[in-house]
Length: 169
Length: 326
Image 1 (cartoon, one colour):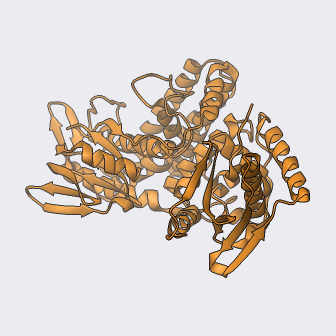
Image 2 (cartoon, rainbow over the protein chains, first blue to last red):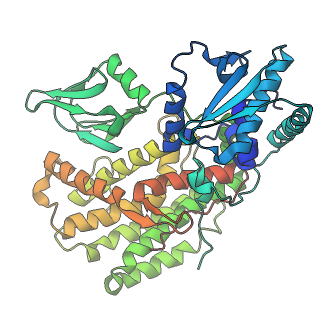
Image 3 (cartoon, rainbow over the protein chains, first blue to last red):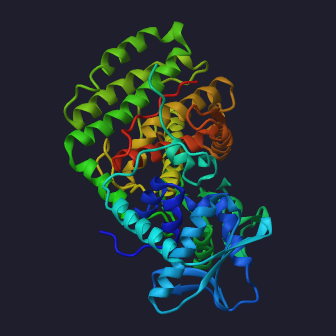
C-alpha cells in the first residue's frame, strides 16, 4: 500500500509507467547517469538570487522555488512537456490543499522558453485521475511489461530494460 | 572511471578534495577521486577516516588483499541503491528449492558454455575433454539438489583444467586444483585471477539493488558475499581463463614471476602487475551487444547480468544467463 506520492512519480507516470513502478520499488539508476547529473547541476545553478529554493513541504514533496505568485520548475528540455505540466499541477494542487493558491512557471532555460500553468477545474480532474492510476499501478505486484518508447535511448533505465538474451540459436 | 592498484607501502590520504598516495620510494601521487571506481590495496597502507568519508562521497570502494595477494575484504560506501522489495524477492528465490535450483543451474550452465567455448578454440587437442564434459553437462537440468549440481560442476571443472595441459605451450602443468595454498604456478594464476574476478563482480553487484549475501549455487554464509561467487562462475571461464592462457602462451608471465614459500607458490609483484595490466585491458574490451545495440565492455556485461537477475526476481522476465555469442 502506497500512501504518499512525490512529484517525480507524477512526472514518471506520464513518461513511462514501467519506470515509475521500478523507481517506486527502489530500483533506481539515476546515480550515474549523465543526463540526470546535468539536471542536478541545472537545479543547483538556478535561481541564485532566491533564498527559498528546494522547499520540502510536509516531508512529502519538494518544489524547486517559490517566487511571488509562482511555483517555479526548471527543465533541460521541453520534450516531456506533458509530464512537466503534470508534475507542476501536482505541486499546485498540493499547495491548494494546504490553503495556498499559486500558479506554475516552467522554465526551459536552454530553449529560452517558459510555460505558465494554472490549476483549472479541468486540469484538476485530470490530475486526480492520474493520481488514482498511480496508486493502482504501485499496488501491482510485478512491473508493467517492457515497451519500446521513442525516448528509451535517453533513459537512465535503458541498460536495465534492454539487457536481455536473444532467443537461442 | 577506472580501478587503481597499490603495491607499495605508504599512506593514502585526503588532500583538499582528492586522494593522494604517499610512499617513501615514489613520493606523492594524486589519484583524482572522480575518476576512481575501485582501489585495490596489495601493499601495506595506512589510511584514516577523513579519507573514507571522501571515498564514500564519491562512491569509491576499497578492496584489501593480504600479503599473499588473497582478497581479505572491502570498505564499501553506504549503499545508495537500496530496494527492500528486490531483496525480499531475491530471498524468496533462495527459499523455494525449485526457484533456487533454476538460478544455480543457470550459473553452472553458462560457465560450462564458456568453458566449452574456450576448448573449441583448440579443437584438435581437446576433443576428448569436450566429449567428457558434454556427457556430464546433460545432468545439469536433471539434478535435484544443489550438492548434486555442485558435484557435476566440480567434475566438469576438473576435466576442463586438465585439458589446459594440451592448450598451454610452456612447462606449466596442471595436476590438481589446489586453492589454499596454491601448490604450483598454474594454480597460483588461477587463484589470483579468480580473486580479481570475485572483487570485480562484487563491485558491479554493489551498483545494483541486489543483496550480495543472498546466493543460490553457493550457500549464503556470513563470511563472504556469496552472490559474487555465483556470478563469477559465469565469468571465470569467459575472462580469467583465456587471459591465463594468453599470458602463459605469449610468455608475458613465466616461471620467474613466481615465488615459492615452502610449497606455497605465489605470483611475485612483477607477476601480479603484469597480470593486472592485461586484466584491465580485457575488462575494457568491448563487444557489440545484440539487444542494447551498442558496444558493451566485459565489465559492463557483469552489471547487465545483475540487471537480468533483478528482472527475474521481481517477476518481470525469466533469467537467462549470458552465453557469449561472439
